[in-house]
Amino acid sequence: MVRRPVAWVVAVVLFAEGFGIAAVQWFMGVVVDRQDMSLAGLDPDVMSLSSKIGGIAFGLYFALCGLVALLVALRDRPASALGRALLISAAVVHGLLGAFSWGLVGWTAFLFMMVVLALIVLLLMTYEVRPEPAAPADARPESGPEPTNGAAPA
Image (cartoon, rainbow, N blue to C red; front, top):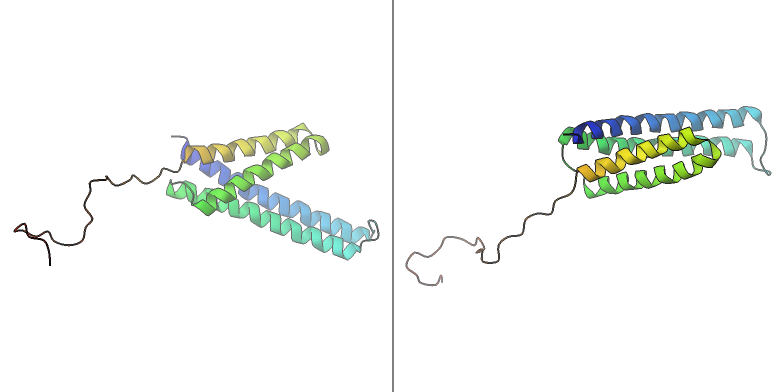
């Protein structure tokens, strides 16, 4: 089966990506802080702090999505409804980042984002959620012992 290895790869990639995003944003915050330059009159300290906070928040988001993929890999079961929503949102984020990175960064960043998007979609599709089987219509509810003499219970 390909399900568990895909879940492991998605978990590792999302953890690495979360750490990478947080590190890059932290580095950009340090650069803005050391340059001490203003952008359209904004305070450099506020720009530096917001870059660091945004990087940590975005990194934690990817780490949480990686945790969901790790739990899927360990349990070999589909993610819960909240976990599926997180993975779907991560897929949407990677689609949007891929679209932006084509013009801003280049085709290699676009290719990376599309590979991660494909892995997340593959993870979601291979672990499909199966509905519970419905009880037959003629099944009796379990309400206690059946009367043995044919009389109705009192």
